[in-house]
Length: 117
Image (cartoon, rainbow, N blue to C red):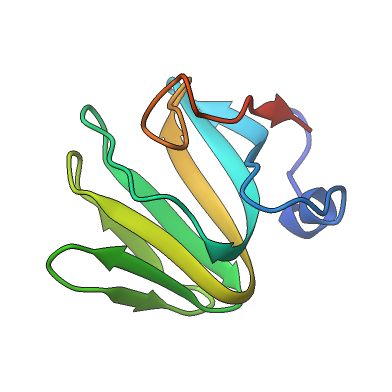
């Protein structure tokens, strides 16, 4: 990485929801930006935690034992194996950090193919 990454510029480069874009990497992890709106599928990640940082908007992460509400600048880590569903009533912009190749649905068969931008 020779230049700083401008997250606002990267988020301005696409409009689709629930399609994380890789903007960088470190120590075997992808740095991703994503736009969220509506409800995602219930899923879990058996081998990794799930890191969310809200950059813009409000995100609710529903879990079977209670929900977490996040606003701009807030971070939450869903522990590995915990079933969850992100929900965004209005558009949310977020930063995700996850091990390279982690499927966004927890299942490689149903996951979106992540592109680097």
